[in-house]
Length: 144
Image 1 (cartoon, one colour):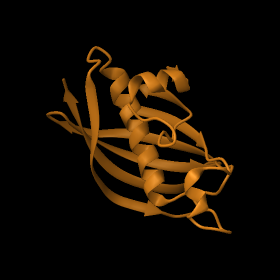
Image 2 (cartoon, rainbow, N blue to C red):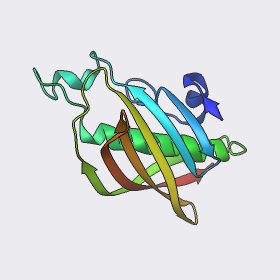
Image 3 (cartoon, rainbow, N blue to C red):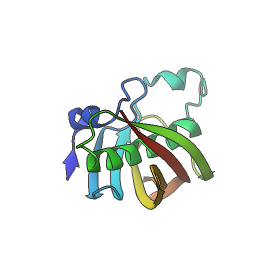
């Protein structure tokens, strides 16, 4: 199932300038998804990271992976409209190559496990098939 930007806005609470996903395809409901983002030249964080040598900050990459997982899980829980996805942890984060302005990045996330209302995922960020970053991360789903 392919989700466009407007459908993503219905699933997670993030909004510009802190929404880092342009589109998302749910590969397996609640378990696997692939999203993308083109980081444009005028992104707010490039002004300070770094002047004359703009690079997407690692925390933004991890956030985009987590947003992708949030979309995948939220789509599977649409019957609960008043849910929140709260980032809990990040582990084993690795940054291999920089992400530059105008790069189209693909975010792949895979479900690892779930304990009660805490979901754990593994994510990889790629450009043209080359692995740029990876991390394991978890989030809690709250209802109400």
